[in-house]
Amino acid sequence: MIRALGGKSPRIAEGVVVCETACIMGDVEIGENSAVFPGAVVRADFGCIRIGKQVLVEDNVVIHCAAEGLDIGDDVTFGHGAVVNSRRIGSKVLIGMNATILHGAEIGDNCIIAAGAMVSQGMTVPEGSFVTGVPAKIVGRVTEDQLRWVERDPALFGWMLDMYRKEGF
Image 1 (cartoon, helix red, strand yellow):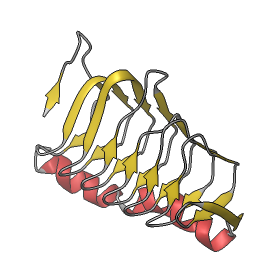
Image 2: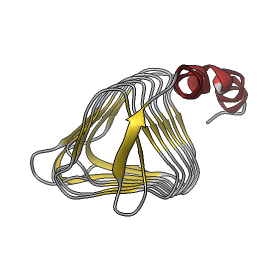
Image 3: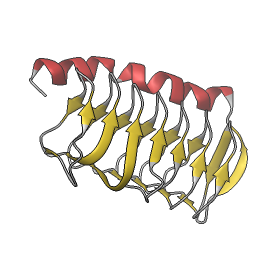
């Protein structure tokens, strides 16, 4: 479902895959080669949500924000069931399955937020950080091997996005 809200309509680049059971509403912008998979919700009723290019919003992810809005960079993957209600997610970031990013948090470029982590309200995560735990802590720098997951992940989904497009999504 793609719907206007408060007089503002989503702006979705041509070729973006949006599954019919996803919900995108309000002041949302989604860049090229991105996908919003089944059960995901991107709801911009308070502020604008800007999603970059090659962003994968996997099944049952919730993206929301406060009045200051939310900026999401390019080449970001939101793992299944992640909940994001933050201020900024940089480029080349992996948000693990069932991770939670709370109000006002900012995640730098080239970061990995581990599955199940809970990033606290207002936390700033510097570029290149590996974050895990509840509450989340920066436990080190992202390694070359870990960064390959971030860099390779959107490419792995290229064939899948083509399949979805061919099927009319």
